[in-house]
Amino acid sequence: MSGAQSSEGISLVYDGACPICRSFVHAVVLRKEYGSLALIDARAMPEHRLCRTAEERGLDLDKGMLIEAAGRLYYGAEATLFLASHGEPDRVMTKFARGLRASRTASAMVYVLLRAVRRILLVLQGVDRLDTRRTAKKPAR
Image (cartoon, rainbow, N blue to C red; front, side, top):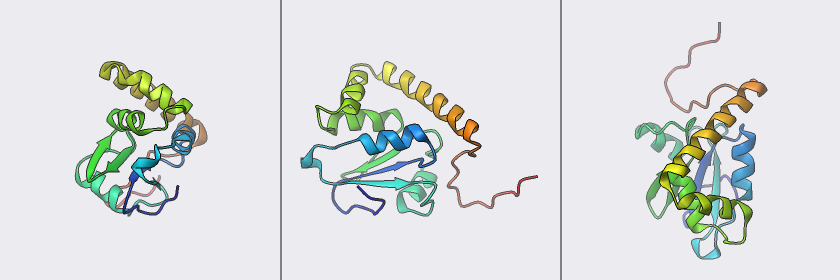
């Protein structure tokens, strides 16, 4: 797994400053038939093609991870459901995500809860919102 763009396989954009996100993406193991998993830390690589694509499509990477697979994008709770469908079945993270797959409502609710916990952890660490937009950033006062 690396930050390089994958020509085959799956690319996953996440917030590298978030301990939950970091732990989750490093625990993901895809079934071999899906190829490699390229991890893209949106904070470290804001100019990456997929970060730009998220911006162009109005997908806020501060509110959800993004997956690209076979030319299709999966965002937020849908990305979690994607990983549930493509992960190694014996892995804990895959089992957790598969438990959510039974209900899109439950999946969305858990995703919102995890996002809130993520935000609290980032505030406690003194980390700003993830903002990969290319617009000029205002200096702090």
